[in-house]
Image 1: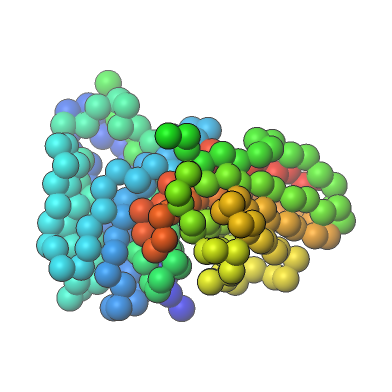
Image 2: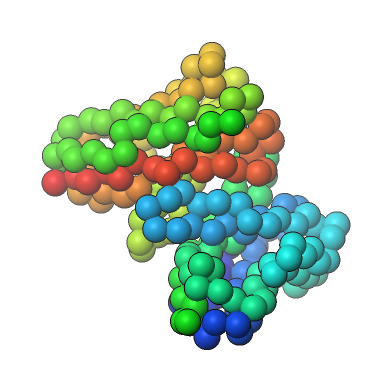
Length: 111
Length: 112
């Protein structure tokens, strides 16, 4: 079936280091790939997204890359800070109004 | 602009009961989606509504149902609750196309 796989499930980095989270998706027709950050007690919040006609997108310390041929996309966070600690979810829009999410990555940034 | 509002924030029910959760989307947003979040299964898609019509449905039993009103507010109902229904239920709204989802803080349902 349609699914999104996300790795790793947990990631611990030192403050100032980079963090990379990777996802693969199954449906080659998917054309929209958002990333969400969820802090404790809150709902997921959209932090960056990319469409299939773009290979890379950057917003300050956050960047997303997409390899449509290989059906995988990645989130890159540079110069990590303690406030980056959260659970991150990748997602793919499989068809109109059907967003499927990865299982999440718990990122811990150690001061 | 107010965000997505979900009520109640916490709910405790017993097996066999039913429950109704409410979601008020961002003003102007016409699409409302519901997700179930559990530690083991992550975010699972329940269903999506647009202009009072269900456009999409995930793989959940018929005990899970929803509806949307003319003001775009949405409710979801779970009948004959089971222990496994304990989860955080998240509502998300978007303008029309279900792409940029804005989530509420969720309703934490515990079934005893």
